[in-house]
Image (cartoon, rainbow, N blue to C red; front, side):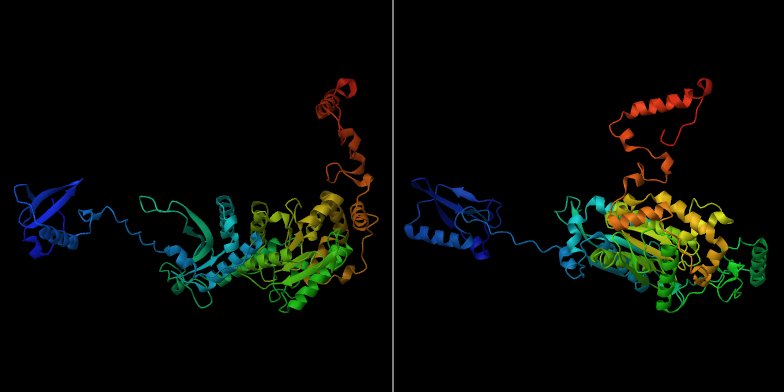
Length: 546
C-alpha cells in the first residue's frame, strides 16, 4: 500500500513511473486512485517517451525525497534527537543557599542553626533548604544513618523538633528513571527543615492554646492544693543539701526564700544574675577555689590556666532556654574549639545559666545526647565532655544525705556548664594519673570541708569561707603525680600502674611479672592457690595482683 503524500489534484491523475533496475530500464505504469486501497501495476502500457519520464520523475521528487519509501529516508541520515531538558531537581537546587561546612561539627552547627530558626519562624507548609557541597562525598548511607540516629535521640528531649518540625535529607537523582518512573539512584546534597506547626494553636507567649474543656471543674481550689503540697514537702524536709522545692519543682528562688541562715543551705537564695560579666566572674571564682585550690582538677593551675599542656581557659555565657537553641550554641562553640589552636584555647567552659537550672533530669538527658555522637560520628578524636550542674549527683555517689554526698560537689557548679576538653589533652592526662585515684582524692578533700558548708557557699556563690584552704599537691599522690607530669612530661616508673586505675601501690603488679609471661599459667597458679593454698589445703584469699 502506497504511503506517499499527495495533493488532491495529483492523487486523481495517472502517474507514469519508470523504475530503473540493475542495468536495464523496465517500463512500468502505475495508476493510483484515492478510492483504491492499493496501487494497480500494469505491464501492458506502452513505453513512455523521454520527456514523459522526466516529468514523472520531477513530480515524484516533489512528493517525497529521492530514495524514500513510506516516508522514511534510507539514504539521508536521521536528524540527531534534541537534547533532554535539564533535570528539574538540579535546576531547583541552584536556587537554595549553600553552607561551606566541611567537617561534622561544622555540619551539625549549620543544621542546628537551621532547625532552631525553623522552630521559631516556620509555620505549617513552609520549609527551608540548605546545601552542603563540600560534604557530598561524606554523605554515604552509613554516615547519613548515624547522623539521623543522632537527631532521633535529640528529638526525645526537644519540645518542638520532632513534633512540629522535622529534618529530612535533600536528594537529587543520579541516574535514569526505571519503568515505573522511579529514580534508580540518588544522592544527598543537603537537608530540608519542614514545619507542621499551626500558628493558630499558639498564644502570644508561644504556649499552646487549647479549646475549653467542658468537663473541667473550675470550682476546685487549686491554690489551696498547691499550698498543702508545699506544706507537706516542708514537713517531710530535705537533707539540708538539695534545696527547698519551689512551685516549679526546682530549687527555691530568691522570692520564695530570703533567709541568710548558713545552717540551712536550702533557705539561701538561688538567683540568676542578669549581667553576663557577673556570671563569668562567679564562674572564675568557683574554678579558682574548687578546681585549682582544692585540687578537684589536677591539671588546673588557676582560673585562667588549665590543660595538658597548660593553656588558656575560655569562658562563654549563653542565655538560651530552648533545647534547639542550646544545641545550636553548643555546636558553634565546638567549631570554635576545632578552628582554634590549643595554645590560644585549651579548655572551654560553656555556661548556660538559664537552661535546666532547676531540672537536673532534663540536663542529664540533654548531656547524654551530646556524648552519643562523639564516637558514632567521629567527633571523639577532637573533644571530650564533662558536665556540671548545681544539683549534679554521681551515679555511684551514694545517698544525697550524710557525708557520702560530699563527692558530688566535684561536679556541682553555680549554674549548668559544659566543659569542652581536647581529646589529646585528656589522653595525655590519663597517661599521667589514674582517674579512679583522682575521684577518691576529691572525696577525701570535700568531706573535710563538709556538705553543709559546700552547699552554702555554692548557693551564695561565695567561697571566701575557705579562702585560706589549699591542698598541698606534694602530700596527695594523685596531685603529686599530676604536678610532676606537668613539669617533666613523663611519669616516674614507681608511679606507673599496670591497669591505670586506683589500685594502691601495695597491690601494684610488677611489669616484669606480666610481660612475656604465660597468662594461662598465671591464672591456673592463682586458682590453685585460691582453692588449695589455705590451712590444711583449704581456701585462701589472694592479694591484689593475684
